[in-house]
Length: 248
Length: 210
Image 1: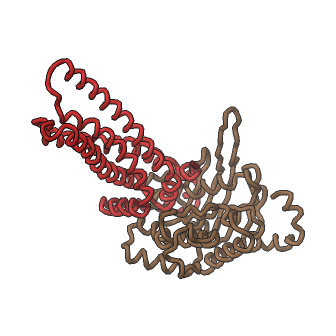
Image 2 (image 1 turned 30 degrees about the vertical axis):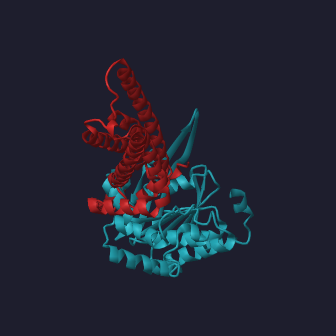
Image 3 (image 1 turned 30 degrees about the horizontal axis):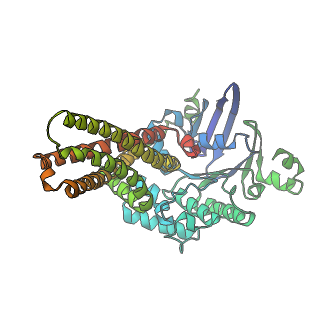
């Protein structure tokens, strides 16, 4: 079952943005293997290519060179309907700005992926209620995003990401719009789901609180992987963050 | 190069299933709900369509009241044609504007739906149904309002004698034209931007800010 050890693999990812005459290599040859069930943080300053990598792994944008393999399937080979299936069933997305549908209630937002998956309405509602209970919002089912705090909105987004039992949760700066304490709660929730549900969590962030819970930390800089650390190694250094501070 | 990592495990590549196509009834259901849950916003958008068509219809309804023969009548008919063309232009710009606005402000929502597994064609279907429904309903209401205003005014100023011989058929033809034009402009304004964003990579759709 060696093939199943890695849930995500990237090979020589390159993404180029051109702005006028300037050519920016947002990703400049990224090779990354992510194991099933891992909690991995992609760390780096803003503009380092974190979000570009997030988009490439999630199939939200096509890289200019290189490939992304999800469960050993090359994403570049997929047609639109297969890609939609992957986004619907295999990957759950969490964004910095939550991206909930503002006119829908928490329940309806969490249900939406089950609608696209063709789940019968009753089952979808049941699943959504179950998930909102898991993230601690069982009492806020019929509230609209505007009636919820930032932390609660992100919980709804996490519940939505889990709706179709994905094997991967991709989070792009999930704590970026939240205060310190709420951010910690969200991180703890992601970690709990990672352990309890066995879902692989890949999080792009520059929030150092993430280091504590991650199995591995990928430091990215100028579109390249600067270093990959196992958590055990980081814990030794966690007292002296100066080195990382300079990087972040 | 791209096929290597698969073969190096000595295993045939796993296949990804194709996303299911949701039936039309599901799209209809979601569209109707979408209009209803953003009712206030829908009414404002529909108001733009309504006003445009009401203006056009009120101008057109004048032709239901013939004013006899001679050069004066010809001049009046020309004036009415010119007014109708102007009214059509104003209504075109008005509907275009409100529809474009209401679709543009949902670009992010389109991007989000794509992330959750919506197919491009399904998103276009949603916006097609929504725009058609709003176009038809607002155009019928707009036609009736414009027609009613002109007919009422004529009734009070000229009395019943002013009604032309083809009043009923004329009204019916004008209704069909007004609803046709209103719905068409609504669709022309809504579908191209919606399908353009639906075809974008989700990351690009999510980035779009208004």
